[in-house]
Image (cartoon, rainbow, N blue to C red; front, top):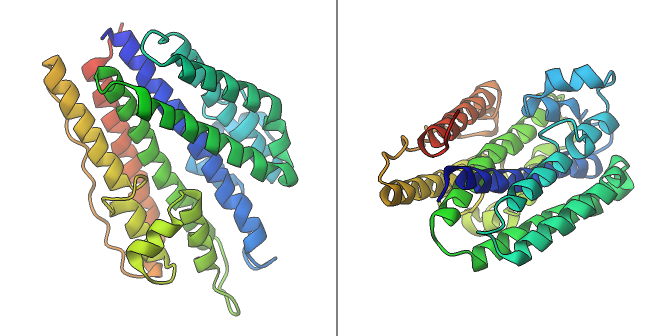
Length: 309
């Protein structure tokens, strides 16, 4: 496979996963607005900008750090390369230049998703239209991923898609966990309510992992258990450990097929989480270190298989 085709497939998978997970990330905060007692917890929407390391870019174009501007930046702003709209557009562009290795039906679906996002992203700026838009993007993204999973031959094209998908998913899972931790860290003491269960329940639901958690843990929702589950469980498809295993497996197969040296395996150091209080500043620093490690894995992949001028 040509290096440039491999790189396009890798980035198409990353951008598709980014679009879906950006929708999931926004939905965490959106749902908390309805589930938490009014005035009990002050939710700072700007946290979502900080979690994505986009504060400098945001402040260059927006003077007010309010909900509307944050949602517009993350979902609709075409100038922000990490926005949902831009991500979908880049999926389409990378698939357009790789149409000889993807099913025609996949090309049709990404065109439909691109049209839907272009026409409807502005409806997400208001709360009454946000849920429907985010849910539709998630469902259409999953449909496209399901189509690729069910139709693509398990050759080099598939493995590069796997690399892109799980690199992005691992990164976004850490950011969604960070979003939950940020809400708790910025909240006041709770005298008459325990919003932690609501917050971590929404984190699980945003990942489609609530029922899996209840089956595996068999107890009430606790932040420490949720963090352990989404970081280290080897069976849930959105845990960082599961993603790491898939990345290493795909890299091993590609190295065997191409005769190139395999990039260093992605390693996941363990952070001891025993109680809710462990999900504070040290935990958030750990998540930041994981994101840097994921970035290093991405660099190794690029240096190994993608040509550079």
